[in-house]
Image 1 (spheres, rainbow, N blue to C red):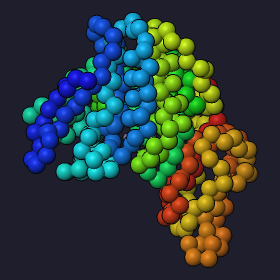
Image 2 (image 1 turned 135 degrees about the vertical axis):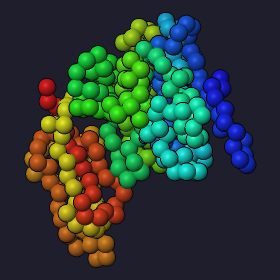
Image 3 (image 1 turned 60 degrees about the vertical axis):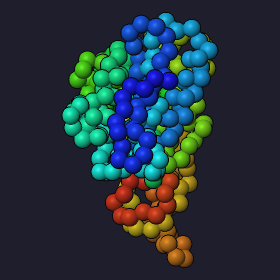
Length: 300
Ligand SMILES: [Zn+2]
């Protein structure tokens, strides 16, 4: 473990940004998780990748940063706890700026690589099918597909704003991918394993490792056109009937919103298209207008 950056803190141990380096030569791949302190599946996924890399002979260097927002992790908060700023909106950062700006600057400087991946979870309210988000076309789509994660989501202008890490990497000429899986504030060991295996397949695709990784179950390869969004029309208690990864057909009952007291039915939400449930609200208390479910089908 190497310390990349240190920032004195007012009344505690200093903040430190630490990395795990594997292989020799210039860094070809940088994997980052834990920019958001309550998103834990990526932290575990990167530690699983580290476990495999310790046993592998590498052709090229890989840098892992499993945790960025250590103080947020301590507090269970997404953002930097002292000023409630989002590290992932502070790029390219500033070595003379606020704490968050300094961390962003140090992180970007430490991760300029040929291929870069930033791993997140959904919010604590929703569960996301493990997925990789890429632009609509280009080398990143090939890299995304090589991960064989359950979902490849090609998105117009995905994270091209350079205030996010993925956008800042792209601005710097790196191929950059945004990976999301599971739910915030929880650890899903199964999804973390899926994410780790996807990252190992990417390293294998790049010729950095030769270890065999089981093929992944790719369910959806889509764009926005292939995704249906379901929002709540009422406030109440949301009871899901399906989970992420389930296949549904038009009319399939996705869940119901009921009266909080008494359980009377207020609204049933049904699938509009054939596809796979890729996002499911897991926190049952909903207000009108909030997102409940996303269903996606593959489109070219
Ligand atoms: Zn996040």
